[in-house]
Image (cartoon, rainbow, N blue to C red):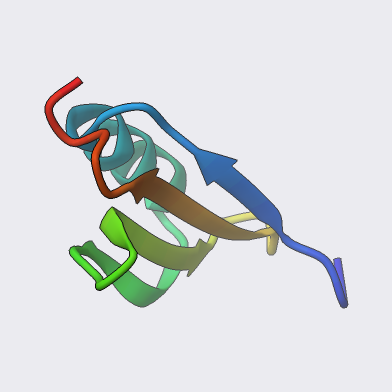
Length: 64
């Protein structure tokens, strides 16, 4: 998986938190899920199989 990662854009904060918690379990978190200037939630981790992930919930989607 060198040089590539999975980027997942979700529709709600709840979904971002659920997906991040489930997929990062037994992995390594590089950027904890949190609010950024561009997103309601964003986080990065490498899962237990060595796959790098980015989870993003765009600003403006947090209430949907």
